[in-house]
Length: 192
Image (cartoon, rainbow, N blue to C red; front, side):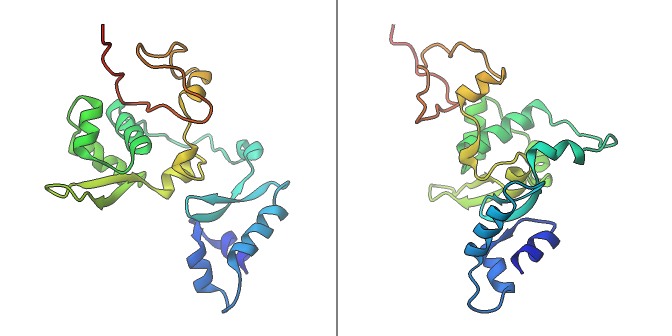
């Protein structure tokens, strides 16, 4: 039954949603684990996407699913920076995004990311003014093949992929394997 629900669902399904559809007493987490093992070496995998589960094409066969007619819409640099800040610093307020970027964030940038369903409104901060926070969505994690935001690459991985300079910024030490440096917080001022 769990397999059928996952197969028919267009979106990832949470354990709570599975329990709501299954007969009383069924153990959805155990069924998910069994399905994950069953599909381990097949062309389709049962994967965790945030707090939900979905059937996805195996990574080594993803090329079969590409379409040549897909028209991609590029995000502006401001949208990419804002999305990265939300992903790495969530939950984050608009003021915090602006502080990290060093410039104001236009309403259109936030609206575009909300429209793409890659970010969503989080809880309000319990600070003066009770600002709203932003967090990444399950759709964001699904699009980038992440189980959780903790799976985002750290500085080491970004440098290895050639996306960052190989030399660390002045004032920052190399990261250790157990911790990931804050990618967007400027280095502390040099005491000299």
